[in-house]
Image (cartoon, rainbow, N blue to C red; front, side, top):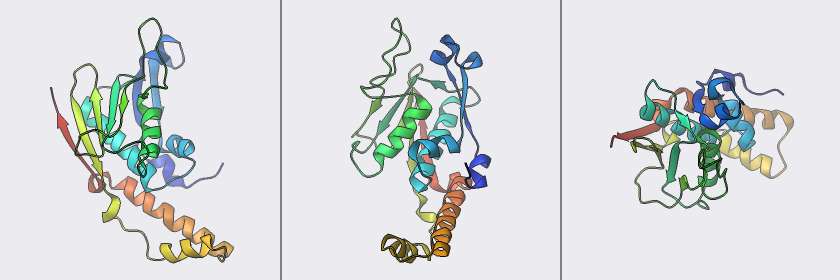
Length: 201
């Protein structure tokens, strides 16, 4: 499987998963997700997928500091409904990394490790996403705006040509390269595209 090299250079997200430790899945319950993992889940790499990854990574850093985030003990709220625009894509990645689900996830074992009802949509928040620690109730509001990293001017006409079935192999390859170049710039400039506000209870 071949993919752009920069996927492997993106800072990973490491968490502790109590359920994983309980079931002997990963040693001491430590689990790491890289950008390639979320790309596999989404089936593609784009500004939305990159933004979801960055929002969660930077939000967890703010919430937990030097401590390992506790997968399965984090609630996730979204400003927009599930059906709105790219919310579903971001939510899927949030579930993958945090373990949070709405009503369809893991129901727990003996009253522990329940991961349902920990994802909420159409919430009255000003940010794109809110991450909440269940233990301290501290939360971080995170917003993402990649507009400061504009796409190459060649991209729009290339998209049109490809969708019309008129692009040659070179043009298709060029489009993919330019698209991923913008994604790489976004991932390398998280402070430029991510804004967050931490609230301690």
